Image 1 (spheres, rainbow over the protein chains, first blue to last red):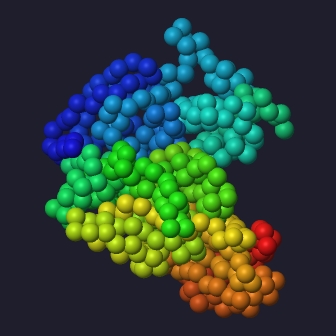
Image 2: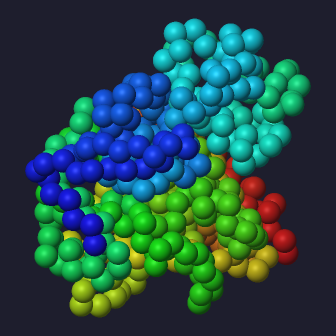
Length: 164
Length: 275
Ligand code: FES
Ligand code: FES
């Protein structure tokens, strides 16, 4: 049994975007804070910290989840993917990111990393999702800028679905 | 906000979890998916001395059919149940209700039993368990007991679980031969908390309606009527639940949903019957 006390910090190791990483976390530290503050990976954003806005969404074991509702110590030993892992090593944007740029699917960009991770999960498991499936996934995010039309257009294009 | 300090335990077996609960009692909280609990810890609505994490317990990560029920272990996520092979035949109500439980991202982590444990009056899975007259399996270091849905959920976010007990599984009765099931809810945004959730069943000349979000917990009634004869009983049911005004909707609006959408849900259940 793993027992971590409330005092002190504990070593947490996991695979982040294919690379082994490690850092120190108190038992209560959120995965979102661990990524940003301990590992310096600030692509993952934090909005509401109670699971509503979706800005903090990352993939854990290939599933899109809220990193603000996940303890860093719970992620120990697992496979984590964040927005930093989407572009190629040369910085070249992937197809979903290019579609976001083309369709103005972001303005301030605060919500964008989370939405990209959710859609990446959807596309990995459902190669040609229909509009309803995309709406279900995007519905788990709040974007205060775009009105969602650009986000839907980008996702529909990647899904190979008609835009209307 | 951030949670306050707690110890974190990750037992490797159910027995280890049970002995932690036996020692810890009221001072500890079980966490599985944490999609309600983590938010409450972040907001400091809940403070606890220790968390017992059962999310990685392989022994609780199973779905099996037993005694005419689909038994769902406490580590099974809502997404895993939704994608359980043949779910729409095994229990159509679950297949219809689960897409309304939270969002894609929270279903990926939130567990079926965790939703039952949280016992929010408007949530979908307690409503399904109540309509189907399912059971919750509770285990402690001293033994195991099964509680019917109506015995388990005692009020608004209150259950009959004792502090030393772990919910190990929930049992949803499988579909009755020929029966029709239906589900609908009213929300501000798909995936948000339901203002009113409705589950219907039609079988052998009987109709049954379950309502969440009006009373302190799911309310279930059954009548020997046809769906198109139910206006009067639905009106009486809507008043009997004594719903109240809150920030989301007035009591009057909730009664109206029970009358109108209730009838539609029962009609759909009637049409879904296969004999
Ligand atoms: S910051 Fe996690 S959902 Fe809003
Ligand atoms: S682009 Fe600003 S919140 Fe979505």
